[in-house]
Length: 289
Image (spheres, helix red, strand yellow):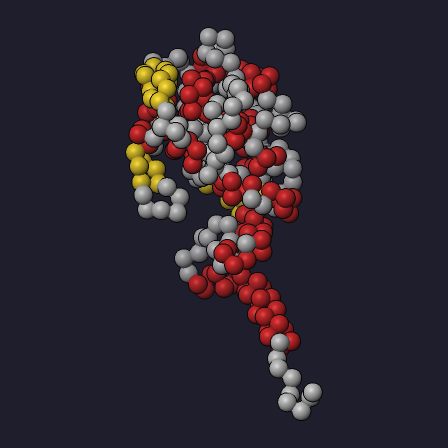
């Protein structure tokens, strides 16, 4: 679960449409509707959120670990908390240096040049994880580009604000040139209405609000760029041995043959370890006092 809302005043990491080019925040200025905001205490506040932004949200969402589903439009606040959640990676933050370097993610054209194919995911905690020749990327939600949405749903919690800033920062890394933007549109990573001049304006505005080098305002997961999924799996298997040894961080095997082929070394090490432990625990012969 996310941290409880902070009492510290937070603001969106870019200027409102009347102070910056409207196109920088998703194209033409959209119409607005009155949207009710739900908080943990069931308090309701009313503010204007662009209609197009609300329409871009999914239909339903699932509560992690349960079969319960709910309409996103009925509880946008809960959906956003789950949509941006990277707490699983935060749990192993001290070990992430083994899975990647604390550097910016490479631009999209560089990723392609290195032979990586983009695989889309809706999970923020899988964003920028790579395996084999695949790179998992979460498309940038339209609501991240809407100033009013930030004021309504993202600025009430320091943790949530940092997660949203981090996701936007990752796209500042990924989209550095017109070629990167073209690739982002082809891969459906950014809204099609975002033009290159608009993106440049947004990035410059974002850099005035968030230190792109100190990274003080972003979630610590985004202190790293790409992470190797295989190593993250290994970290989870060791760090949370009893609960995640088989599944690791992301369980992607639908055949036991493939699982044993790829994890034979791990299984052998565990087998030898327990064999030695059990041998050492054997009872001494009765003639030995």
